[in-house]
Length: 153
Image 1 (cartoon, rainbow, N blue to C red):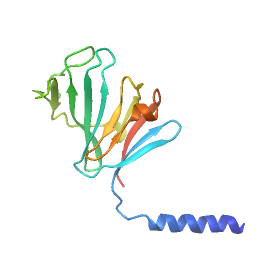
Image 2: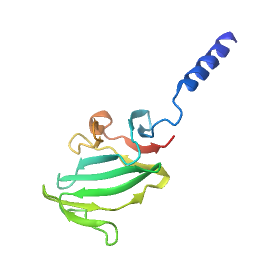
Image 3: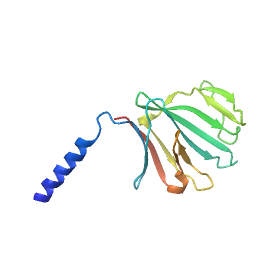
Image 4: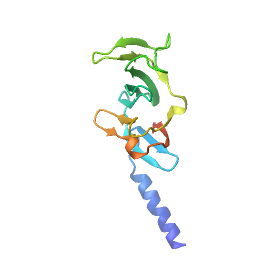
């Protein structure tokens, strides 16, 4: 009984030590565990990048924390390969200086503040990047179902 009370006291002390108004986090979960958590303050961008499964060309979806909501802001397409392209009324198509295209100003809030995906193999090379961090998702959990969730504390 004493160990249970001691555990509750330790848990309460750890909870009390958490900063109030903690920074929002972009969490990467698989069915098995939490792969990573990245700080994602208001206005910061996080991009999910990979190689297209048919052509191998670069593709990216970029998100921002906007007032605690995970918002798809823009996408990069190497060309208009299978399954890629512009949807009229969904952003503005701009040629990228390095080749390919950006669809800017998409401004689509993600349902449930999350994105679910299947992490590809090393050939697909899924990775999540912010200004100063790169998570090689395909190295960490190839073939796993994952969910990117913005937790806005």
